[in-house]
Length: 105
Image 1 (cartoon, rainbow, N blue to C red):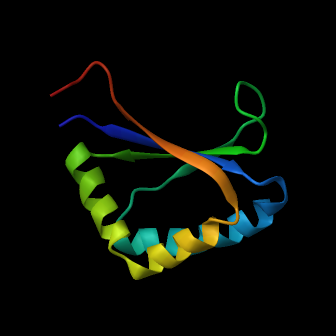
Image 2: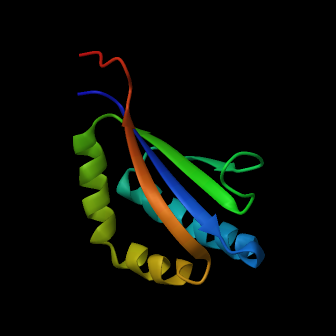
Image 3: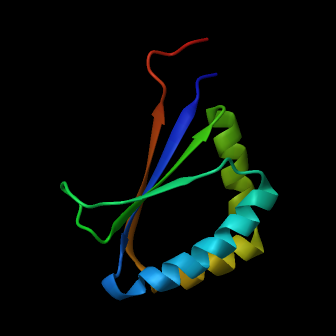
């Protein structure tokens, strides 16, 4: 199975970066318990997305691993609570999923 890259792109409300950092610490603690791989966070400084955009990237060993962890997250009451808290912070978001190319089996 090929390695999978998940990119979560979020447009943050301009005055909510501090709140985002606090909530992200809570996400880290829960996601670590669930077995998520480490994430990298990038804030846009140039390009088609404005400076209130953050990109969060994670590499998963396979699509099956990604799906398993997503299902655990969606079933977690702690994650559900944090998702509600982020509604006041994030204007919009989307996910992108990539595989390493060329595929090596």
